[in-house]
View 1 (tube, rainbow, N blue to C red):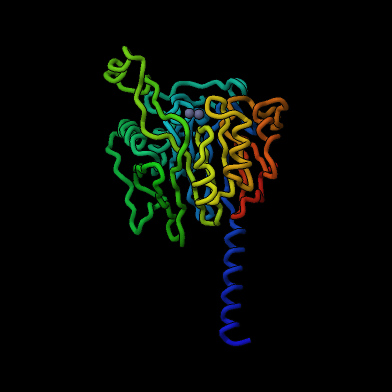
View 2 (view 1 turned 90 degrees about the horizontal axis):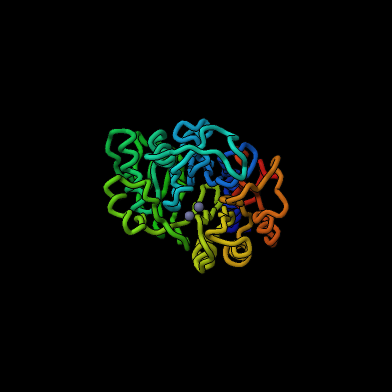
Length: 345
Ligand SMILES: [Zn+2]
Ligand SMILES: [Zn+2]
């Protein structure tokens, strides 16, 4: 073989080795629900940890105790798909395992919301649609008594560790990169379309706004609802559906352009039926693996899927995909090819 050929072979081997090494690294995914080891009605909050250590909280919602929840640990990035109460967190749990899995017991988190409480406590970067970032920045200012600035992006990336909470507002389709200190690559976070709504309830507004809107029985919308696509540094690309009905961008954007391998699919009958959600996974997004979240029903008892549930129906309709329940406190580990290599059952 010529020297050139040897060099080429060496390059190919090095490349294959690098790919293998990246694949061996895992993204850790930990749902934070109301009941340990179960998937319950209100559960949405999920932590993603990149191999470089970047930790992302998606839709804190109502199943956390707020900024002091001991399960949170470090949170570098806070994501919010839309402004509905069950995602922004108008209520929170007072502790684990209170009430039933179908009807967990919660207390008010107003006026702050769980998302603002957590971002304030953790000095997180808020990556979300512009008006939601602005709305939450005021809440965080109220908690901390200091103004909230825009996240700096030296070299095109937000540093994972920030000295204070900051906002990184995006429009639909916009991307931000978050990078751990000393890491070669960052985690890329992009908002994608969701067929839904992003209206606040009036009780989250100031008294003056409430009074102005009450006679018309309407409230304000905080811009477009969204899902997210996250590209992790081990090559794993994840679709977070947000609350959504079926839409064609699941195929044209999420599948054809981003080529996602893992989907976190929100169920919940106000947004989508089990049949439509299964169609989205089988025919439009076509990931290797699916994590079920946002069930709006108690899905498990003793950690086992309840037969006859809408979630069971959804899983039954999936074709050729691994399906995992987002059980609270169970950390699942995925390699770059979306194979679950730990914590799944
Ligand atoms: Zn919603
Ligand atoms: Zn929802």
